[in-house]
Image (cartoon, rainbow, N blue to C red):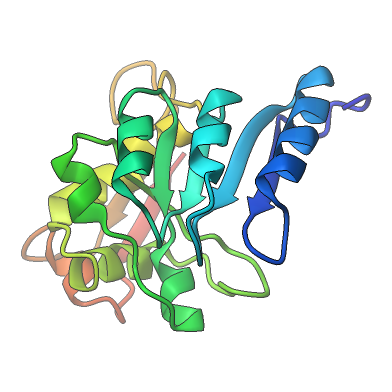
Amino acid sequence: AEENLADYIDVFCERNYFTVEQMEEILIAGKKHGLKPKVHVNQFSIMGGIQKAVELGAISVDHLEEISQEDIDCLKNSTTIPTILPSCSHFISIPFGNARWMMEHDLPVALASDFNPGTTPSGNLNFVWSLACVKMKMTPEEAFNALTVNAAAALELSETHGKIALGRKSPIVITKEIPSLAYIPYAFGDNHLERILF
């Protein structure tokens, strides 16, 4: 915080890791130093972490492979962005998040890679897009929205990123010739990118 090296503080709130009480202590300590809360929660179990994260003003709650109606109700009445990490589910063979149920409750679901050496050694968002469609029953358009507009919101970048518009800083992706948007998650093993304009 003194060297301005981070904007957020993140805690993995889960059985055998950090309890809800420990998460609260860590997030409050971070907030005292100007770090905004984000939480990895509900990967394996439901233990009240979402409610406490929302109470403490978490920008996003990530994972959500396990989720309850109480969690959904809590998120619905908040500005916290629910973020699902399907390539993590794929790599360690755990259930996929129930994006359809969340979207039916009008939650702004975001998608991310969770790129890390332990549970997701890939930052390939084309693969995340495909998993969201095939395993989580999102339409290609819903998943695209989750990877762009909603992902920008989960990073507090809604004013500058997530959409292509005048004054925005979003990169523009030019693909090779494809028959439709849905072809990208369909042909997930192919590289469709021709060029990225920053």
